[in-house]
Image (cartoon, rainbow, N blue to C red; front, side, top):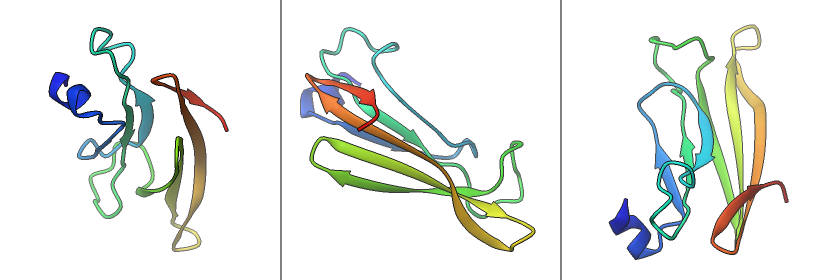
Length: 99
């Protein structure tokens, strides 16, 4: 994590847990001097669900603003649809929700 901070990493993308989430590194890595946004993707195609519908993320990045839109599978419609949207803005080396 220190190497990421030293390189100026602002966004970490993750997967494999089959659960979608967003957050930042501020609480866990307080001594790094930099906060990265962490976006965890769900699973789009696996049948090994974790109590969450299959999903994927669409990220839109405009300067210091990042929006994360989670698209979830709706069985009854047999399609993915937008299910959740979060927005973040980076200010003074930290991320805050909202735009």
